[in-house]
Length: 280
Image (tube, rainbow, N blue to C red; front, side, top):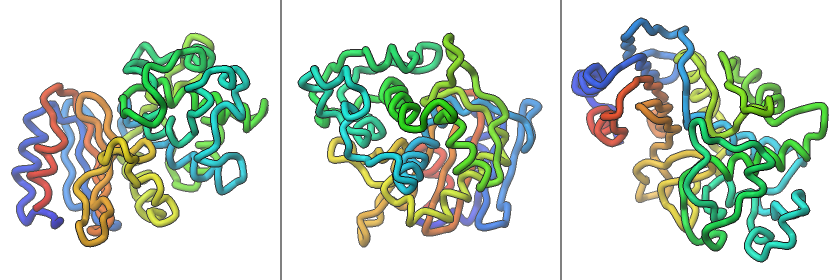
């Protein structure tokens, strides 16, 4: 994969699809940036499901801190799951790879509270099907919350262990009806900060490598990150990205030391179409 010699087609594609912000950087060098509709590099923007990209990274930090193991059963923490033949087989890794067996749902305004997510029945046998949705991340949040105890929430842990060291901040995070913050969606960041988070992940890509390993069920999805084209020589993704509805994206290309942020409000924006113009 190589960066296109002429970035004009990629920029024009973004401009014509509700562009709010586009910043492309290689190392510390900003190669291109465009803004529209009153946005700039400091304007907060909702990430929507791009919010998911925080939690695979958080899980690996929590494992390093001795809080959890990716392949431990949820039922080790959530007692009520022990009596369910399918639920007692679900692991934290399955939650993060969206292969736990939950049906589609739990996105946008329908994100359930931790308790409602825990009580949601499984639709499919664990580990057999990838189904996009927010419920698995809420169950992961419930598990992590119990492991952290009363004095720290999953979002506190994310802020202290990852965001502060990365030098970035969440501009705002919407609340659920019970006052908690959702995991699969809800965060807003400015383009500058989301790019900095991408650079932080890029710099630690080797220690975070499990985030970018596909499950057996879906070769295009890791631990809450979408995976792009694979390097056939190494069988590793040459691109991975966070994705939110209406064109929100954080693209990372390790082989090129490139990270890019895209914000927009468009139902017609397609990652594949943009990336085809950006890379060759």
